Image 1: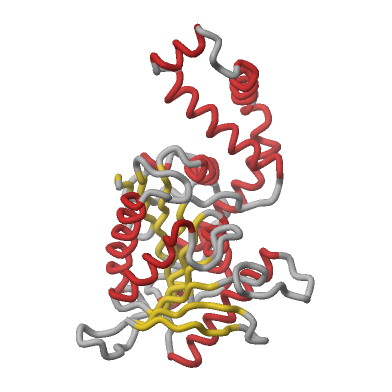
Image 2: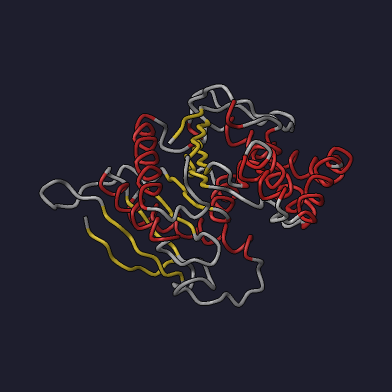
Length: 319
């Protein structure tokens, strides 16, 4: 394979590294599609612990042309001067890169991949550009800037950890009996969880309804989605609330796949957890070969149905 730095965007200010697929003899080979790896928070294009480098090279070996992009103001790409919010500019920049690859390389099928906020950018960009045929969301968090919404989700995650890990742990009970526990935090978390049903209608329902409807529209457009969540990550709680059910127990579907990564942290720091995720993404991407050139060309595609929280389409696996 060959890797080379490029400048993208209207003003050629977006720095990216493009990894070209190649045949076994090292000669260039026509790519089967384009992959964009989008910044995880403020981490530049290598990704957390070089995760994006490993993903880009694995997918290039499988025949995809991959782009590790620095959005404006991150890594080597300078800050924009037009006053757009990051959410607006990130989507615009994804579309500029897709435009360039479509015009210069004739690519018509694109896969977007991101971790954390990069997952949300992938999701949002897919919603406005029908050239995006598939997305991979790794530990997605946020979806909305509402502080109360994010506090609500994170508190659900803390409560789940207390109930699952602490309540049935002899060590946790020993810490409690010997006074080595943050009682104030424990009481606060459990109280907030106990009163969550009262607050959920006001805080969670509007955001969950909006994001859930957007996700359903993607699925009905036949935009294939792989959701990768580390066990214990808040991304699980975000998706549970958005979909109105436990993503770990959802029934199988070819269009929405869920993979739970055991023994891994949010940023996939450990080499073994990265390897499992890379292998899973590569295997899943291989199943995209038979999909249409773009999601809008899918046979039987229908208009979006009325908004609702639950999508009810998933395939769960353990990594």
